[in-house]
Image (cartoon, rainbow, N blue to C red; front, side, top):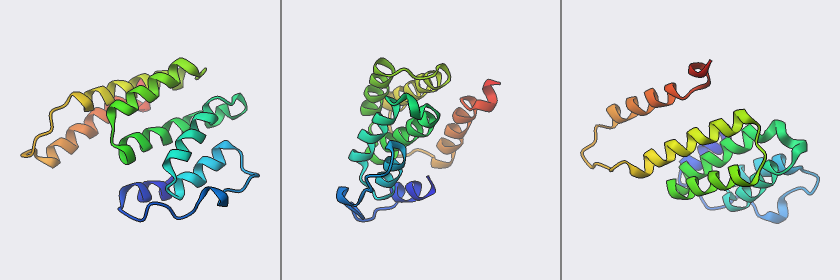
Amino acid sequence: MNCFSCHATYKVSTSYSNEAMVAPSLNSIERSRFLLATRQFTAAQETLLQVLKDPNLRFSYDEALRSLLVVVTRVNRSPNAGIALFKEILATTKLPEEDAHQVHGWIAGLQRWRDSAPSKDEDYFAAGEKLIAQGADLSFASES
């Protein structure tokens, strides 16, 4: 995921590879990692959704969900698309209760993002501290 974080953050060329370069021996989660690393985000999203429908990969659901959240927030930067995507996931997949609970929290966060009014005079340090505090309130450590 470290590669994906950088590639999603910095403005680099659209794709380092193409679909033909994906090894056919890879399962869905391995395939999605490759697609994310090579900035093929649309194909990666489709593959991550396949992971969530495969009960044999249930131990990879958390990774798939978090990767989808990164695509929605850092690549697409669309809270509305994220809300729709995660609501669809909840409706069409059988997520473990813990994962479903986490997704509900993300939907709420995406709704706050959508409804927040952007300010050009915003103090970015104060805004960052506020987001960190909100994230800490939603972390696994605070739920135990």
